[in-house]
Length: 348
Image (cartoon, rainbow, N blue to C red; front, side, top):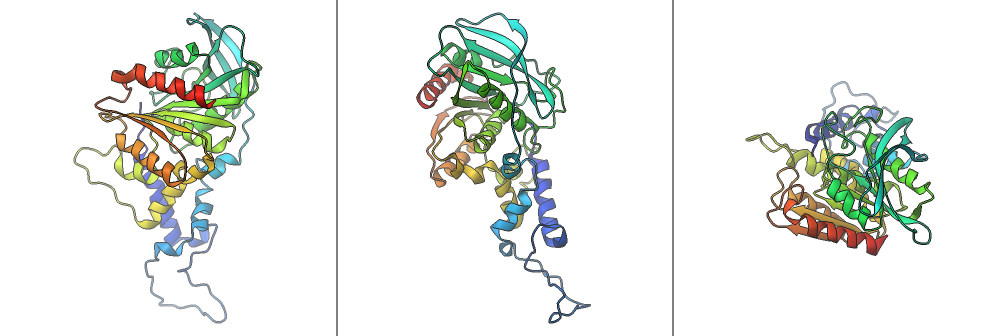
């Protein structure tokens, strides 16, 4: 259920730090420790090369550098997410009180497939509430649209929610390349176009959309919330939701390997690249967290990290700790599902 982003994130930070220190002419800002040739400041042939103080780079300069990364919140907000009509590919055996279909939609010029559930019966005024359902990491060549997460999706479908579980690009029959969810924007773009496609569906109330995300899907959901302000609530299970500077140093180290270190400039860069740096933009839209303390894939501390960041940003958070439980909350699955269903009933 996971990808290994630490080395890639560390490479991003190291690259940013190196460029900021050694190649300021490539940055979208001027760093204060570089002398410019002016009439009152003639060239020096033997000038020393002091190490620049990281505090000399302003937050605005860091943000300008971060904005050049396609995965950044700024870059994602600059894109458009039109979605498309949901096209039925095939009908599946129905659930207890809902239909099941494999559908497709358009994202970034690609055809993306998804599993759609729709409650039977008369919808409420304005249409059904809907949940964009974001699965965790599964090796793309092993992924199947109708496998895994069946019980999870069923719980929301039976409770009167439309659900749409996207096969991110490169998964199943979806077009495109599976480039990962942490350093490439593709999966997030697919999630945002899934939400846009639900908004276009006459059966759905476009004002009552939320996200459910597990593991990698937790981060995709958080990022999508910060890009699309129409998304009203998110329930994140065992999410990879720590800030990027934490992911770069505290996740997936080889046994016995030393903890990587970041200098202050690198840490500031990764922090600014993280969705966690923009939590004030939730503007009170609620987040619910679930995590087991015995999770061997994603540390429980990642939930604690996001909860602290949310509170520091003045946002509320509903966080549940499951003592001794694993990455899939297998020992508390029914309790966690009931809590998530209740959360969406209260907030969508």
